[in-house]
Length: 481
Image (tube, rainbow, N blue to C red; front, top):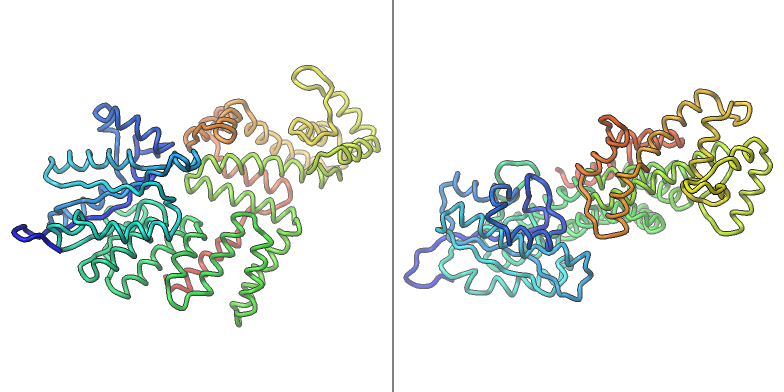
């Protein structure tokens, strides 16, 4: 594999993901567009750029006292026909910036090669695996190299899996896998051969479970012999996170037939919860929405978090009104509106209150419509009118007052604008921007997730513990992690 007359060296193979380059310690979104801007002004931003995965890898070789001859960076460059939201995640510019940072660090002594996954879908396991199989046969991978190190971090799950499999397949015992745990200062080497293959996928599966990425965990588990049950349980978790409750029930039902003993009792719980969610159990659905929002927030999926944030808030208001007033605001065709008019007319105090409400433009409120302003007006009736009219206790009114206040903070202009730009447009979102907008509305520092839990409890649900957390631990225990 090595050209004659040249000293053998080591190569490091790394996938560049859209979280693998940071600006001032923050993720850069969208990767393709912002990456190009930063690349064009590289000298201006150079000191502010960091590489959370590549830098610990380079540190590892320095501490080990082993000089690298070559670093190969794999990045994505999807076809122009790809959906813009997917193409915007491409990392080709991140990889070029990383190449410059590496060469600056090594004063140009280290060869850095860029390889692009061009015109293919980086989330497709078969496409990425086939790419790496072809690419690792090239001379840039073998000329002057006698040992290959593969980073099992960065890039999409499909890219990681494809590179690991192809590298172990291509280079055999001369291939060493490095795995960087989240927050660790240095990567750790994994064993080779059959044990390495199993260890890699077990570690990958557990890493994916840490981030609630059940779909990616299933892909890794399917590569482990004798782990069919764990793979199906991960499938269940993925279905739940996608609110595919019928699919989750079907998976749990199939697993239940194969499980035994205590395992069967646990799967029975999974099956029953999926059934209840499928059938519209409001308490479970509220908790599910809360935890989905929490997972998005903790994993840095902030655009998705904004979607679930406002979905959760609206569902909370609907459920409070259903529980306290017996009025269903979940749908809004003309029959629903007529039904709500009749229900309101049966309560003169409620009708008088709602008919006195006005929109921002001064027009009478169409309270029979399932709009946010109508939901708020129904809730205000419960808060502002006496118990003799509302039928709720003063203590319950106090709970709803706190709930309504959080609702107003969530729908204040700053956060609403951020949501509209991110959800309905091409605007970005970050934890800092979301927190700043929320705390600005509140006029004080607030714990957003804690306030969301208050909303959920106010609507009669319990935000924790979550069965999917138990499921993660169950799969880990079965893997012996």
